[in-house]
Every structure is written in C-alpha cells, then in structure tokens.
Image (cartoon, rainbow, N blue to C red):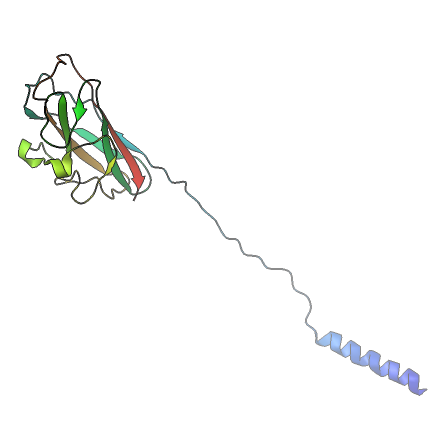
Length: 180
C-alpha cells in the first residue's frame, strides 16, 4: 500500500475511534420556576359619624361612641390623623378661647375619661400627624398594625369659651394609612 493511502486510512481509523468514545447526545433538560407577586394594598376603614350633641361652652366632652378602625389592606400599616376646621372655629392644641376648639383622639379599648387625653399626645391638627408609641396612644395604638387589625378610636371635644355659632358644626376627621 502506498504510504499516503496508509496515512489517510490510519487517520480515518483514529477519527472513527474518537467518535466512538464521545457519548451520544442526550435530550435537553429544563426546570420551571414559579414567580409570584402581590400588589401592595393600603386600605383603612372607620365607622362614624361621631356625634357629641349639644355641649356647653368651655366644656370638655368625651364621645360616648367610638370609631372602629380596621386595617383592610394586605400590609402592615401606620395611621396618620388630622382634621379640617368647620367654617367659624379654629382648631388649637391647647385650651381653646373664643371661636377656638380642640379635638383630641386616643386609641383605647374602652371609653377613656377626660384626663386620659393630653394636648401633647392627642390633639389633632390640620396637618396629618403620624401615630407613634405615644402619639394618639392609649392602651392601643395606630402604629404598625397587621392586616385585619381592628382598633377603637375615641374623641374628646374641648368647646370654645364663647362662639357666635349656635348651629351644629361639622369637623371632618381624616385617617390615612401608610405602609409600616
């Protein structure tokens, strides 16, 4: 045999042997991963209205009914509280004078007494104030409430020392939920 043919033949045999050593191709494998997501839902509900009825000038009155506040969302929530003044009166965070009033709030299981409220921790303002370990806290709080948590919110109204308004006035109270 000729040398060139022999070389090609040897090279062919070696190539064939190498192909026999390579394992046969296998079918592809796959893995599935479930990806889930839940959209944050901030939601709070509160019962009302709260009616104080007829009160005397310069008096302090605690509501006889509370508002039941519920975290209807799907995340932990912290509440912020604020009010909107009626047309003639101005809210204050101290003892009111003429044409002034104070509205205070406290989270508490049972009806508090006048002395359970203080201006520093419980007075509502026009700007939202976030609940904290002391702010609006009685034996309950509006801080870091799990979904489904129900709390009880009470109010104290401090009447003006004098006023020209002798018809019913409406103070709008707002509770806002934030994550946390």
